[in-house]
Image (cartoon, rainbow, N blue to C red):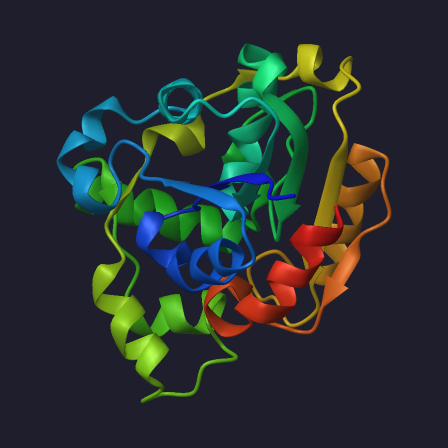
Length: 238
């Protein structure tokens, strides 16, 4: 019997990044919904609206419009700060949360607090220069997110131009997740062993915060692009 999967992208990405994974899940008979968050992908012009709340509302509204009632909600990277709010606001529609190479916030906290001082300083400097949005240099995007795709790989060549400037406001927003941590929604953490953005050591901390043991993938930060078959198998098992 097919299942419902909702795929929520991370920083600078869009629904486009899930296409290889979505195609595989759909071929296996599942219903799949990939969401563009405000300020990302074709919604890049909405960057002034971007916040954790606006991101979560976009997902909950998409869930309702699709008629999903028992969804596996997958949050990649930054979306680890988004999908707990989806579970809070639409508990009847969420069957399971999957944190994929994701930040898992504490009961009260900010995304910015999860990154090393050098990355925080770079991000804030680029945000000032960009008037409120951040565009990493392509070389840095490759080095942090897609190191298992060699220069010239068609998937990398396709992905880099699609990355949109990241709104800075959600990074600095302090969010209360205490309601989520009091819930019993099932959750899984998928750790990427070659990840330069959310290192395996940090991922272990985040999995422990969720109260689960991580499931490991031998990839960099973006397995939905570099290893969609392996990721599809994990998602079908949760």
